[in-house]
Length: 124
Image (tube, rainbow, N blue to C red; front, side, top):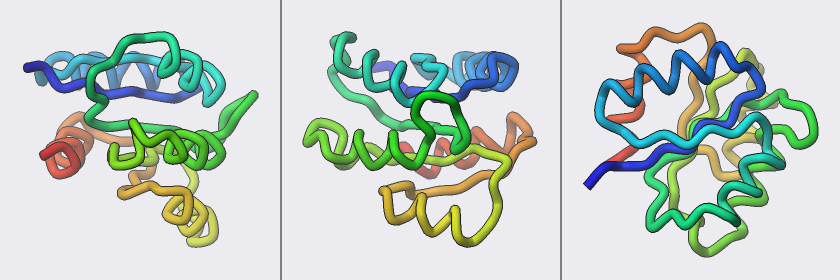
C-alpha cells in the first residue's frame, strides 16, 4: 500500500522538488499552499491514513505552527508525525513547533537524500 504524505508550503518551487523526490521514492503526495488549504484538503479528501505531514512555518493565511496545532486536535491525525521544513532555525521557533506537535525539524535548503532519510525515519 502506498504511503501518503501531505506537503504544506507556500513556495511552489519547494513543493515541486518535494513532490518529485517523494513520488520517485514511491510515496503518494498531497499538496497544500498554506495551513487553510491543508485543513480544507484534509476535511474534503477521503484519506484512509495520512503517514506524514511536511510543513513550512512561514506561510500566508495560516502558518505552520498554527496548522500543526489545529491538525493535532483532530483525533484522526493526532498520531501523524509532522516534520517542519523551513528557513526558520531559531530555538524559540523550534520550541513552538515541538509544543504544537512537530517531531522533526529540517532547515531549507535541503537535498533529496536528506529529506528521504528523514521521511524514512518518521514513517515506520
